Length: 335
Image (cartoon, rainbow, N blue to C red; front, top):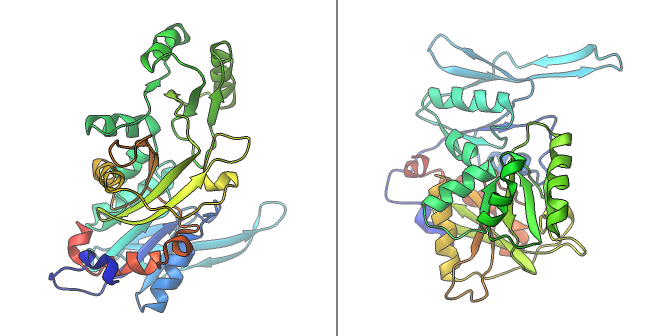
């Protein structure tokens, strides 16, 4: 922990209990929740995984929130044939409980539970505000823009009659990137090679999801992008993600294999700046490097409020789970 000793200050170090919000029906590809739980147990930190899909809450005689898991199995006719009700549950106490949210606001139950926990004075990592911003690419763009952070030029799609104006707004050059504002893992992202295909591409996306908001984004030529993990305003890990062959996307979920990379001080500064802009305690910041990495800032393309941890440890020679859990011993990192 010497490398990240800035997390631990002279403030009194106190024991704590960890609550982790997870999906049961939507697997975490990086298994971050499960691995964090295992590490916490090995360090003697009391931990409780709460499944937002089927769990429920109560208020006990002390006025404290209690989280209960309700696990069940169904037969082929969708009838519950076996269930397990954790009636004792996990008592949430503001003085010693911190919550790691491994689900997003896109899940309505996750949003409700996260807000309910915060209403009882408990810090969540990340906050509902951070998830709201990071879950929406247009909101992320506007927040970073107000903080003078370099990004690819972006416009949100309105009525098709206004499309030409929006194309001009981001420079009018093709190819161009079309994205849904809530896509993740490289899904909902299309590279449009020429203007004649733009409207039909947007209409196709809308036919698949009529409620989808869509943005147009300037295409930045690159051979790779970089994922930077920022924890409590400090860079703790980096990954270089080469483009998938015959694809323009670099996301690990698209099949590419990340590599080690050392980023510049300017790139570190911009990533920390982006994390602060979304008020994120633990985020993954993605950027495309500039043509002069030492003197020109990178293009920030996304801030992930629930960063995956695949390849983080082995490519950075760290234990990200231990670093995260150790950092929470200092109460100033809860604020």
